[in-house]
Length: 163
Image (cartoon, rainbow, N blue to C red):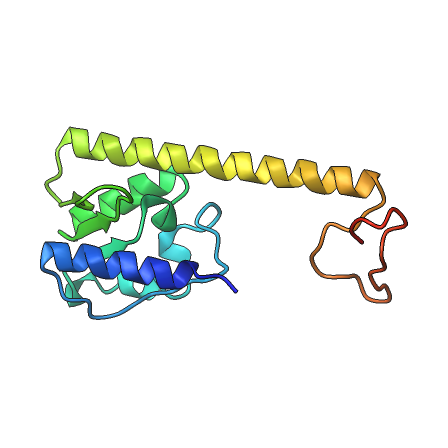
């Protein structure tokens, strides 16, 4: 079982406390890819982004929990400026989160873009690594995990390693 959601909540709570914010709600979109899905299309988060008059800021545990693409970061910053809402991203290893106000200067926006670009690269690297791993497993006649197609069952691999 993953501990990630609990750690993310803790990081968000810490950022809120450091900034003197009160948390009023949580949007949790477990299993929804930030790489493929804009914040404005996520089932739990999107309704909140469409009601910005109900709060002053949105807090994420880290940039890559918010977006994994530069295009989505551009969207998010534009939304914050348009609706005069603050975006907050936890920064692991730092004493203070990254706070992006509607009046954020160019250097803050550039930092956001750099972090989004890093998250985008990381997502592509992870995807390529997984694809390569699954390809190698298939070539070796091994099962890489996931749902088993109907009518099949997994069996121990003849080498004694894996399925």
